[in-house]
Length: 158
Image (cartoon, rainbow, N blue to C red; front, top):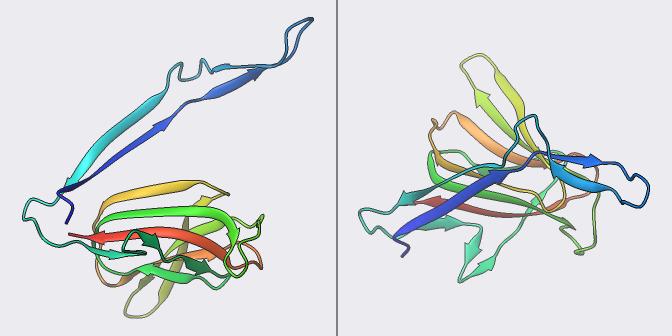
C-alpha cells in the first residue's frame, strides 16, 4: 500500500523568434509571464489504508476505450485521478488524431446537464488531486471523433 501519492505540474510560456540571417528559429521564454510556473504536492495515506485503484492491476494498465458517446471514469469523491491520452486507437493500437474530452454530467431532480470540462490531445495527461463531489456527478471520458481512443487512467481512493 502506498503511503502517499506525490505529484507535480509545470508550464512554460514559449515564443518562437523567427529565423534571421544566419540564425535559425529560436524558442525563448515569452515575456508575457517571463518564467516557468509550477507546483507540487502529496495526497497522503495517513491511515495506511489499502488503496482502491481503478485502471491498474499488478502494475499493468487496464485502458478505457473512450467512444464518442463517452465512458464513465468515476462518479464519487476520489483522492487522486490521473488521465492520459495515449494517442492510440483502443482496438488495434494504431495512431489516432481524435482528441479526448473529460465531461461532467450532473443529474438534478428535473434535468441532466452534460458539460465538457477539459480536452486532451495525443500524449497529454492531467491530474486531479482530492476530487470532491457528490454521487450526482458523473465524470466521463469521450472521443471527439469516430475512433475509440485508448485512455490510461488511475482513479485512486485511499
